[in-house]
Amino acid sequence: MSESYDLLVIGAGMAGSAAASKCAAAGWRVAIVDALPYGGTCALRGCDPKKILRRGAEIIDDARLMRGKGIDAGDLSINWSELMKHKHGFTDPVPQNMEDGLRDQGVQTLHGTASFTGPNQVLVSGTTYEAAKVLIATGATPRPLDFPGEEHLIDSTDFLDLESLPPRIVFVGGGFVSFEFAHIAARAGSSPVIVDRGARPLKSFDADLVELLVERGAGAGVQVQSRTSITRVEKAGAVYRIHLDRGGTPAVLDADLVVHGAGRVPDLARLDLEKARVAYGKRGVAVADHLQSTTNPDVYAAGDSADTPGMPLTPVAVFEAKVAASNMLKSGSTAPDYAAIPTAVFTIPELVRIGMLEHEARDAGLDVDVRYNDTSGWYSNYRIGETAGATKILVDKATDRIVGAHLFGSGYAELANTISVAMKHGLTTRQLKSATAAYPSTGSDLGSMI
Image 1 (cartoon, rainbow, N blue to C red):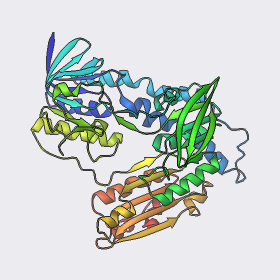
Image 2: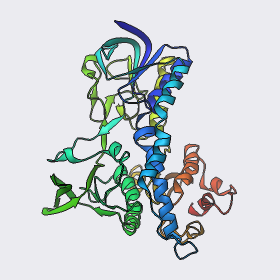
Image 3: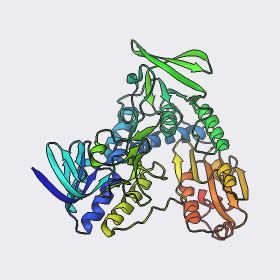
Image 4: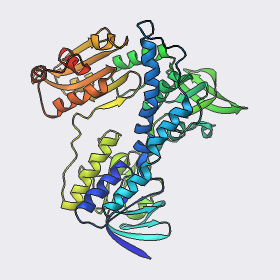
């Protein structure tokens, strides 16, 4: 049995759903398939549930910061099971709501593992589907680890479904997942340790601000062990014994839970891409600038599935999918615009980057004015009792335009959105300063930062 579609989307996350909706609205016959519940990583197993759990941690942290300043925090604590129930109140309805929404738009919703059987043929649960175009939007999966005992680790999906939080947690890897979850766990009463093999964690962020984040996290109970590799993990009863190598010196660390936070890779293994004559590598499907496969013109890819310059962020995946859909509909060759996209590590406080790092700006031949501010004593931080905060804005002296913005502080992820718009549309710092902001607000600090 075979069915035919104008477009078959593999992956029912935010990106795949966006492309399916766009093409269905244009009158195409569209189907979408996923082996997991509809909604994807961000809504179900990543960004959104993580931020709900972070809210509990924020409340604890905010109360502690105001201790002795009029607030008696007392025995304020997180009830993990109730917080998790609150999270499920958001995530549980998502799959059905998303599937219903797609069906209302005329999209055929399929369930099962998809694999190519030919350039335009995809097998799902025993049925072969023909498609004039196929979009691969399968996202990413935890990176395979290379030490004995890696099977004892849980991943981010498992962490976001924990019924209870154990007292000692080790996070493997110094990236987003480890830092965000460790900051939540510390405020929830656990003692988290981040083990990172690199010289410093969060390597894609400004080094000076990362140092401030590590220091602030240490004060909240988040320990970071850099230049440390895991050689093996053993289970000893209810405890996990983690064997470490610290620059040639062996060490042992015991934990009640070990969490994989050492990065993700494109989730392509089950697709049988060779049968579709689709080239791919470690970074995903090989695509041209307009997201079309370099070896099969009927296949497109977006998000973490595609080897593009875009950051592994849900908003990036969504606009890539929309661009891919537009190119399929119009036989176009439009490339996504990756300029001035903010990325944030939602620790407490958060760490944000937009645009270039200092060395990148100088390597590009720009003469930049580095405008650094220690904002820890500014009113917006004093008001909430926060003692950590800094910003570093890189301004091209020739144009007076911001080419890089690096922020560490409470509420700075929201401030980053204003900077992103300014960078994307070429506003100068003089133009930004000419705007009158609502005062006193964190946003009103922007004029002083630049």
